[in-house]
Image (cartoon, rainbow, N blue to C red):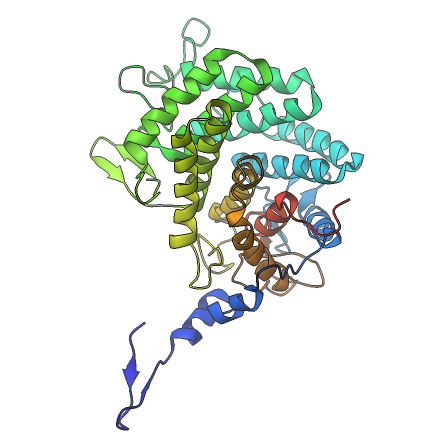
Length: 404
């Protein structure tokens, strides 16, 4: 923000900048700094459970067994299918944290609801017409198998991976879209976002989740083909979508060039994919990439005091803004880098962000919003996308006080 000087000699003041920050985000960087003390963790294990149970109480729709799009809005709309996969991950993380069987029951209920609402018939165009929408679920269902050993999850996940990679077999589906011959490009590498005219780019949001899903399926099956595919797609993504110097992850590559718009969820899946490959191969290059992708988030997606900024619409005027789910996606993969790869330097950053979000919660409903925003009145709509970030990070935070 530019400085505006007054007429008095040698007096310069900064006008409007903090006021504007407060208007846009509900609090200023100085507010974020209230939680900037190292080790000053502002939430406990009981807070984590309160936050997550409140999320479910307000946003899980029992009649349809899926998550609503928003609370307090008087609508029956449900969250779109691909975001439900991240909420399914949150249920699994709650069980892993607590060992409470009520979350296993919720996991099964949610799976049933999503099966009814979206079907897991990956060849049904009425529900699945983008490769990334499928791949978010394919990775989540592989994790569900690893957690429960229920082979149904594994079978659906493997069939989904095959469908995205190879497309619809024409001998079984003579009415398939003429370009639906496989998401993977065997000549040039990488995966396409979809097969329709407006989905022909090779997006980060399909390529990195494919690496992750392949690694999860490799862990689940020990089939080396999945590991080979993960390495292949990761190498293409590194060459075409990743700046190894800055850590920036491009949105997509198109025939006319690369779109270098960066977002938290693409940074997060790049980081997660690289970290998983490092753990499997012990190749230091992968770990360097994972750290670079996370360092970019801290450098470019944060406030001056290093709190994660919200993405998408900065108000609740657009409750259908799916970018609110991006921080919950980061929550799924940051533990791999911190816990499994031993990169504990990121703990304080995640802690500060959680502290601010929890501080700004609606204390009547115990719902949280985008990190720099206070939750609107309980009569106002609050989307499950934006409400997911803080509880998702709480569930995977490595240093929860009073962990049970």
